[in-house]
Image (cartoon, rainbow, N blue to C red; front, side):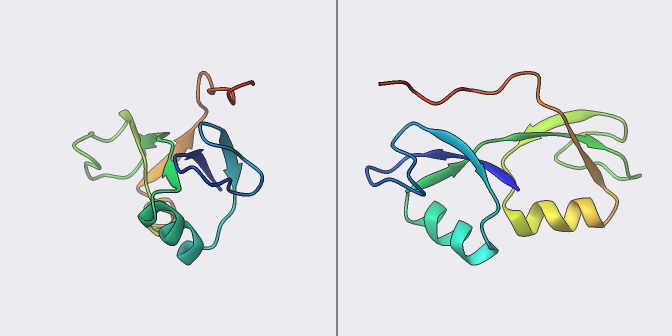
Length: 95
């Protein structure tokens, strides 16, 4: 499941421009919404647990990055990364 920011003028799943939300889109839905400018992937925090550098980060280090679902899945399932809990989450804009 990824975290997204609505970046287009049309709502996505009842979320308006500027809202942040979590959802489990299928890969093609995520790709279409991001490519169409309706969503941006909010960077997640990761720890490198494998033996190789990932995103210029050595084993044991942490970093933030906005991976697509297929990219993240490959790195997590391959034993290269683990998700790290975010310290704070941005709240949706209130009207």
